[in-house]
Length: 148
Image 1 (tube, rainbow, N blue to C red):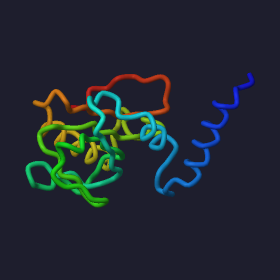
Image 2: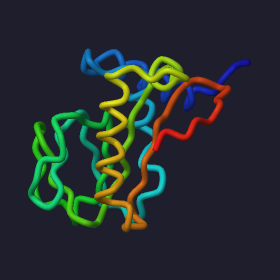
Image 3: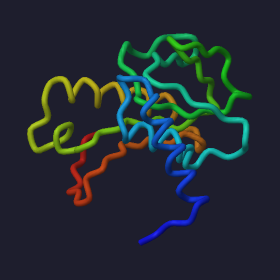
Image 4: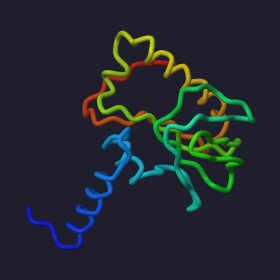
């Protein structure tokens, strides 16, 4: 297949951007950043990566999500180190190249703690219809397990 010049320029720009991407990131996170947010409405949104989340001025945990999209109009404070999201919600995203290494029949202690953190954040925002939670993976075939 031969692609047109416009598409090839976009592809080369994305490749160049990815090669300059922060070393702790990975391809899946990069793709999510470029494609998201997925359900947030409006245009005044931004994202943050691997930052501590505060809710009602209280740090939820020292765990983090890989990416959080949020509406800039409803965030009290945001820095590279933390974000303080009010009841307006956001998109909370955990990226796993292969979900099987994170969630399987026997969940590791590390994964259990991370899932407990995700559940705690979910409980803070579950009343809000503008809060969305995703675990995004490259894996094609998934078997669903009830984890909460």
